[in-house]
Length: 435
Image (cartoon, rainbow, N blue to C red; front, side, top):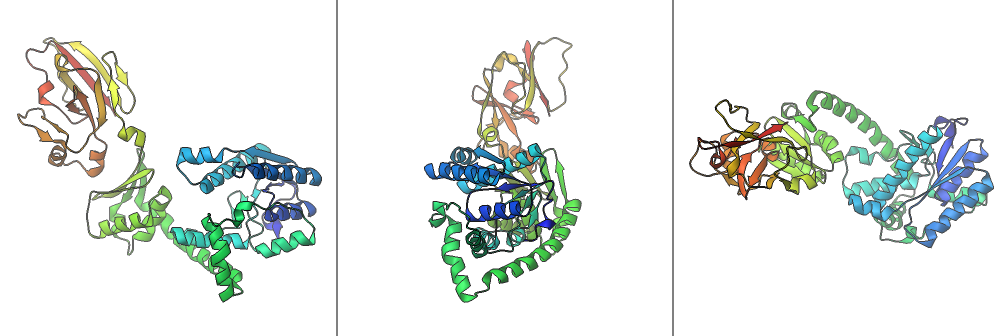
């Protein structure tokens, strides 16, 4: 192991120690070659007594090797449920978040994890099955930020031989034998088939991933140049210039690199590219956390706040200001001859006697109607938006204010004629929308 390229002996290294053969071999090698090591063990509490037994083994091993040991307990199932992610993803997030904090606290430059060549190939195949861009096919990197992987050039068999040669004890995770996990099915069934076809399969795959890394480096340079020219973050939105997209010979790979990390699927990104090619503006595509609107001038990527999007907010009669979900200031004013009605669309004036509380603030819905100020008949909000040339993103951001179940204000745009100030009005409800 040529670890000198990655780790400073004197500054030391944090070693991710599960207790399995891989991490035990890594810790043993580092300690016996003079590296200052601190172990970090995660107890994810996913295997009951077995998880606690692994923790006890790690503590005993570290005491025997005179290695400082840090242990963290995680409620992994709860974390996964709260974020609606898989157990595997939850464990990954928890461990690396904790490692980052430990590195800062201990003033250690890097954490060594015991991924080996078999792990790298399994990850490649896993990404291939799930769908990925070129980055996902490049495999694991020996150095990735503050994470180092010294065993990537060695196979699982090499690691096990090392453990036998040095008579190292280690624990075996019982879930490694279960085909309930996709990675295990790849390990137990897919990889052996490839090895039967090509006994040098691991070495061949390492070469393939090295070539893909070279191609990826070239492509990343082009993507970075495109992002500098064509992508802007403005008021919480990501804008991808349609003009620059249409100048690309093939926009889809560029869109993939930008949108995939925001949770958009390969299928959604392909459909977005087709919309651009066919000039079908106004389409919306959804990921778990974002909306992408294919506008005539930009692809507009907006954060989705589901709780806000789907909620209704009541405003009681004694309220003079709200800041959630938008900022409104309210005041009741006795009317006199000096009262001036503002022409600002963000300031609405209503006959207070016609208003019923609580007011309700919500997103507009298909089927909503109102009587626009100055008109005698009712109009669908969707038609009102068309008449006023609102873009798709502008329509998506519209809030309506209701009183007694009736729309009284398309916030920032137009009030309902039925609630306007007249000659008989004695008190005005003035609402100021502060963007």
